[in-house]
Image (cartoon, rainbow, N blue to C red; front, side, top):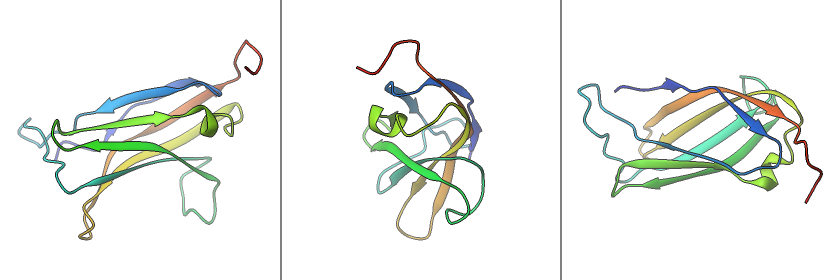
Length: 116
């Protein structure tokens, strides 16, 4: 496997932020996502869900094109106070196979404009 990868990014609180992950095998070929679901978790720190505040963003698997589309929607984004968060994007086959595709930090900044 050629993952997990790391991607750190900035996010304006309350905006929509979307990115696409195209997982690859170690030989560079596309990882077959048929039969997998995905999860995108944002947290205040790394650790068990019982010890940190965790938010669930949207992750959708496209098994035809072997990609995962991850989206922070405004409803989730409004809950993120300015600061630094960590995140993981994982896929799960339902057969005890869980892989972390992407991990990193999110720097959340308050918008210049007021609420819409």
